[in-house]
Image (cartoon, rainbow over the protein chains, first blue to last red):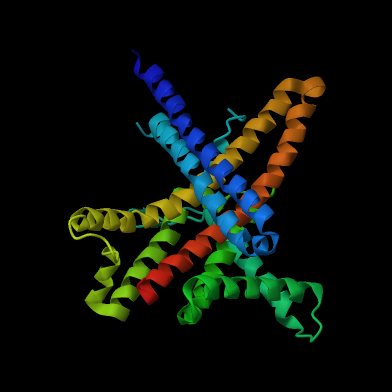
Length: 75
Length: 243
């Protein structure tokens, strides 16, 4: 296989990381919503934690982007 | 290639070339926008605190809100011991926030989309927190790597994992900010390219999409500054209070 083609395939494969990030973000918001439905008075206090969890989960998908960029441009 | 989405991250020299030995110290567009954001913070805080009214004006209200926001965050996550570190965390938060927000302006340059900038910020936090922990607790700080209530047979494994996770802190802290800013701005440029290539008839769909994405990016710009500051608080909490 050509090296260039292998690089492209590898960079594309790195996009699989987004599946995990999607599951994570969905879990965070879904669980927050179901918790907030059960106890609306406690929901406001946990909002910063929600944002923190969202940002942390989103970042794991972006690590995949960094891998793709390293494969494409650094080698 | 003018439509290359990576073109916006190019660092070029403005003004004369300055060399210190083999190190290139020229004034670049990155340093220009760093200066701009630092001056913007100074201006913002100066305007907000110029007239100290009992019933605050709008600018004073925004300034006070940003102060109490950070003060409350430090108090909640790191306890009252971390009060002396308020200026550091406040300036860190404001710098990252203003760099992200100024990067959202069209034709400007996002300083935080370069890993070396975010890595230096994260390295300052990491080295500072480590030194602080050793100064405050001496060699007892190494207890951070030994979680309580773990069976003795698992300890060798856990200690290795804890040390690796401690050492990967600056990497994850910097890559998170850098990757978020870079991915967002690349995505905006890619959608902008779609608008041009689809032309007057089909370009409206990606245009409306990119308006929505701009809103998301402004949210992310704030959120990443917040996450950067709150993770610094969490690391500070480890160093000050040891579990």
